[in-house]
Image (cartoon, rainbow, N blue to C red; front, side, top):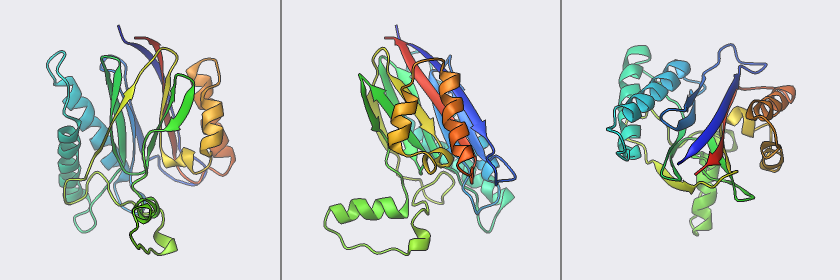
Length: 240
């Protein structure tokens, strides 16, 4: 039987006046993830909270044993956040990233929109599971296919997809197998912009309580300037 343990930690950082990150840690539903309200728009915290609530509500509403349609869940969340944005900010809207996973039957099914990330330590190997939906990253992927793509440097980190956009976002769906000893990290860019993958891979695999591992990661990002909110959820597989 699949058995997981998890911990979560969020920090406002040193610059922002409000924490617009939210996290999912629902042990009963085996549901984990993060949402990061889009900076530069009003209502980022509202967008992230609404998204987390919509996802959790949809998973809990499923009949026992039924596999969720993650794309449908994300699109419903997008519609809900869009409607909320019409009330809070009718001229600009509101938005958030969303990266979450639902564990079932020895597999973690992931849905991803935006530039929050998921990493996995699986059977001794560390890798980034998601790809950022940013102008810079999507230009890189298109160039790798032979396309000619230009963008302004000032827009390199701008999102190309988010929850709350006018049309349903394309959702990256990923299946991550789970084995005993594996760890999964969900985190916002407040962590990944300050702590590179090489350090994440080493620090995230450190033995010990998950709370201590997260505390070390988050405090490092804050010590290095903490220009953004920092949020992370760390999951460990203790039985399959």
